[in-house]
Image 1 (tube, rainbow, N blue to C red):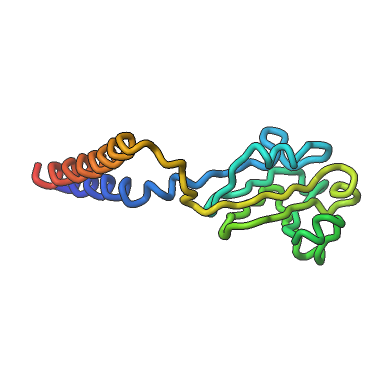
Image 2 (image 1 turned 135 degrees about the horizontal axis):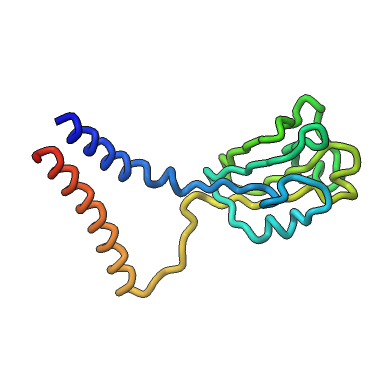
Length: 161
């Protein structure tokens, strides 16, 4: 009986929390992380950022930091007060709102001459996808409903098994 309840909870959790799994962790700079002389503008242009995603900054905290700035500070490589810097070396920033976001390193000349800055545009969680042909859309709706019905049937079967 206890295993039936656990299976039911797992099935319901999978359906309810499936949207949470859609968030993406974006490792800033990929394998190289947050470091000097990497083209972060190119890195950012190859990535789609959505509300709910995370930016993950991996770096040596004795050599770098991260500031979230506005567009004006970004252009001039000017930084807020030092106590506003992220400086753990494993900083995670959740993208909570849509729109433009700017990030820079505030150490020495890293922003102005070493390319440690980038700007992104964060899109809404459910950006509209291109409209599929009518028959494809009907198939998509049927497929989605089939998955929900199957999960429900499995849960009911486990309860009464």
